[in-house]
Amino acid sequence: MSQSNIKMFNTVGPCVPGEHYTLPVLSRLPEDDINQMIDGKFYFVLHAPRQSGKTTYLKLLTNKINSDGNYYALFCSLASLSNITDRSEAVTTIFDQINQGMSNSQISLIKNKADTYNSLPGISSPSRKIRIILSNLCEDLDKDLIVFFDEADCLAEDGLITFLTQLRDGYIDRSEPGNKFPRSIALVGMRDIRDYLRHVRPDSASKNLASPFNIKKEAFTLANFTRSEIGTLYRQHTIASGQVFDDSAIDRAWYWSEGQPWLVNALAYEIVVKILQNDYQATIDVKLMDQAAEALIERRDTHIDSLLERLKDPMVAKVINGVIAGESLKGSIYIDDRKYCLDLGLVAKDADNNLRLANPIYQEVISRLLTDPLQEILKTSTEIFTWNDGQIVFISEILKKYQDFWRKNAFSFPLRINEPQIASFKNKIDSLGDKAVILEILTLVSRKYDEAAYSIILLAFLQRVASGGARVDRKFAEGRGAAFLRVSFKERAYLIECKISGRSTVEQSVSQLAGNLDTEGEKEGWLVFFDRDRTKKWEDKIYWDTQEFEGKTIHVIGC
Image 1 (tube, helix red, strand yellow):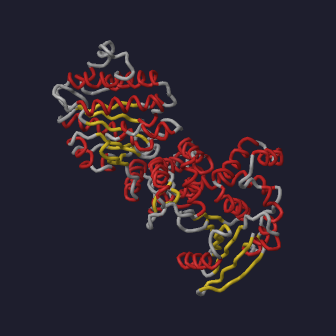
Image 2 (cartoon, helix red, strand yellow):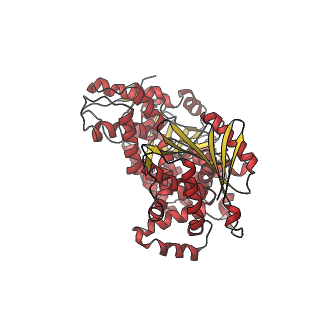
Image 3 (cartoon, rainbow, N blue to C red):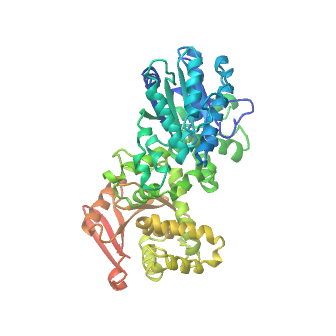
């Protein structure tokens, strides 16, 4: 197999003028899997998160198939179909993009056929247009055709249904003598085809439209880079420029990105071009990698913002809420939601098959998105925690301050509230600047992240510690049974879990926290219980109970 490559820094350009760093891209999906689909005349799906190399992969695969000589391959982008819902307009655009793909083909027989089918009988019919052009192209070729439709999930509503129905009809009829249609078709995008259905129509009518979607044989996804592949990419920069990424920096790039291709490239570009301004004499170490990660988190480039936009999706909100709150999402009602978020690249599975946020950069960005507006509110109502001779104020004292803060302000936050209450709350934050953005995020927390909102507010409060020099880390993963927060300063870590009263007992929660403390190598932990019963007196909600459990000291804190 000839080796094809993906360019490093392909989202932003190479760091050394004239140099391109490459990594074998076709190895990210086993060749045997694709060959099995093509040789078996199957239709299949390839899905992977945004900017993970799908288009590069497809173009290289198209070239490889054409150069191997057994079949013809055609690449066709449907990116221009985004937001087109009219059936006739969508079908016409797809037809035009097929012609464009033919015009761009390296195979002269295909290239010469571009725009030759525009006046065939029946070609004006939206219900036949795509089937006619593909059937006629296959009749005019001396080898079987494979078609790759990139950005297929840009299609929506009736345009999507018409497109898939014509593919299915052509697939079925090709078994009849004399009928021609592509040997294999791949639909490529961010989602599996099963998730396309939910974007067809919001009403129940779409439930009966499954038949056009049942032609696909398999769904594949592109793997992220491995730690070794990150090292290979970065070392090529060293060869080109003499600039060294030390091993600890490569490890740190793996930690922050977990191999997400766009993040791997963006971290390196941030350091070399923006931080060091192409000073190739400087060695790239952990400190620079952390600085680059912080810059990406703060700046939230288009790639990250597009993922954040997904948080407004009810399916995504359900999963992220569970991950933040530590709930289990393994019931049958979560199957589609889990898979959808995995396909989007927002979450990943841990060793226990529980979902967690996909990488530390996404985790930090999502955390800050949900807490930043609250930070603005907290600035006016809480102090920045001070330091005594370089030592953090003891965490118990901070949490006692939080109990007092919560008692005074709990009902000011929009937790499970109605529209008039949201409007009233908006009036309280008139002085905070961009009210629309603040209200949007607070409303998001209220309506879609209500179970996690309590831990998010505590997290925002603890961020005041970070303003004083400590670090607040989030351990968000389903199945923990609680949000797991860690305040770190120098060699000391303070582990805090959040619980909703009534959903688990104190005894169960103490046992669970003790297990987490053991895993983290700590002897002391703090367990914060939020009581949502507004009829209960604060004297009954606010308490502090210190227990010893299996050699661990655990403080149970009522709020």
